[in-house]
Image 1: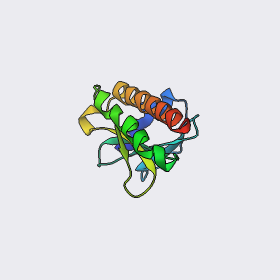
Image 2: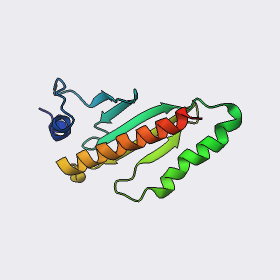
Image 3: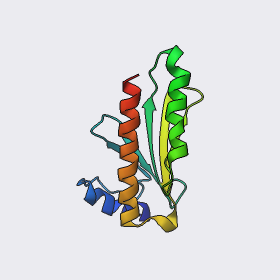
Image 4: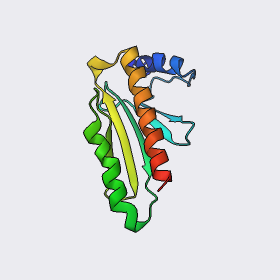
Length: 131
């Protein structure tokens, strides 16, 4: 079993899923209760990157204010590793992502980051849907 897959076993046990393991897997996609999808990738190689794309479906006159509100969360992000929120320049989407580097990938840090990223996704998703 590839080391990326092996490093995710504690997380999959924690969330009580058992995806089919293949040596060639470099990414997984998890459906969240909120309806969004969390991508877990081996990128850069040897790291674990979590990401999620949220649609930015707000009226044009509210777009700028909504973006400023959402992107301010980056300033209040004091935990390590940081969770970054970004806006796509080519589409109306918010990208939420974070990464554990090779030397940081331990069961507890992986589970903790997963919980934080999912929390961000839920909070930002609710905020966007209320606009």
